[in-house]
Length: 547
Ligand code: PEP
Ligand code: MG
Image (cartoon, rainbow, N blue to C red; front, side, top):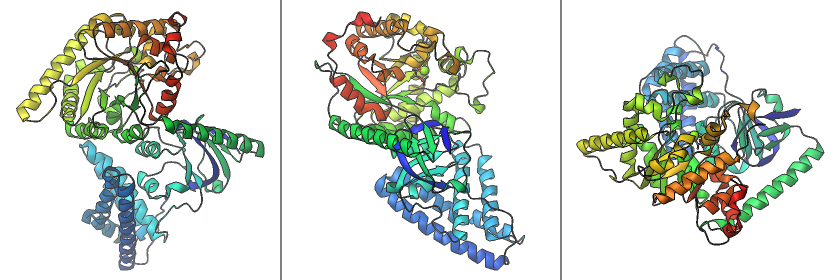
């Protein structure tokens, strides 16, 4: 029945029957009378609360308090008297309990969505989710969607609570027809390491697909529905090989990252949310090299406050213990637009108002973030880096704002580390060329090869028509990486690479040879990178070949 392309949430292969998760649809219908319908509501709500209690306990034991808290919140919402009053009011109009719950949930969700507080705004989805659960219980399917055999879940989107409730042993993979790679449920899916893809435009989630055999290739981000026998054999072989390789990599856990000739390099991880820190730990990362903090802003409906940001940063820093965590300050603009920032339309957004440029124009936003970061520094080994740097003046501004943040926390009597390291990303040719001067003013460098390639080669990184011209291993990029590395070391500061090139098999020998101190990659690549490095003898590497 065809193949469909999406975006990768978590890599891997899955072969099995599709289990279609259909979003609950509720039509307006007449009830059996107000009292009878209210009794039905009470019974369904009690069943829902019991199911939420079970999910809470199960999640608590498997993933911990942080993730389990969602179910406690949902329980409070189900018990909430305002919600109950709204259901009663709907029932007075003679409708069914299903419709009353659905409508009451919708009203409360709208109320939450209109609030100023970003945290409260986010609760709108939770209310809808709780209402949908009660409606499902009213329909006499107390546990709603359940898997009875190993399956690939096919859904438009899946509430996080639904995912947590399912038996993970029975989930082979997930296909989210809608949704993005950084939604909460996508992040959870990565944490659980379930092969999954999302964002498939031309796939209709139809119940008719329930039970049909499918292949999910989450390495290529493809779904094949009703493949033929040859294809199934081909993918079974691929899956077997992939899993055998993955199992062998476990031998690299708990080991230092050393080249064949004993040169040490550290493998850090890139994460986009505080929840992903679990993945980094599971894959034995030696630190976090890039926490893209802008996703906290992208997930919110309004500027996230100091407290909210502090909680995210603290979670990561605490979880990593003594290991270093590098959090990048907001990298908004260019391809990451946010409505509430009200950014101007631009002819050339990649060359426009983004990152540090926004921070200089709107220092109050930057200050809130720096205060949250300094506060989190008290809980572990935190370093902060700023993207898109092109000048010494920008670095001076960062230090001035950092001093202001410290003064503010002093006045409030809050603890923080005065010597928290502050570094910059080297991701513009300007920063690389002036890296000798910049290195004297910061504690570390991290090379963002995605942007460094874009700006050095004058190739738009999001323009698919330019892929033919794009050579990420271009000598110009390699020369700038070498220059920045030499200048960092001359000034006595470490340098890492956190762009996609950090895991480029062909350039790896070059990076090790020139002495890059740290490579930061997605958690799933940590162990395979450690293995590759163990096979490289840096004494044999001919630097000239790359530059
Ligand atoms: C980079 O530019 O290489 C980088 C790591 O940052 P981002 O991809 O988030 O722009
Ligand atoms: Mg970048």
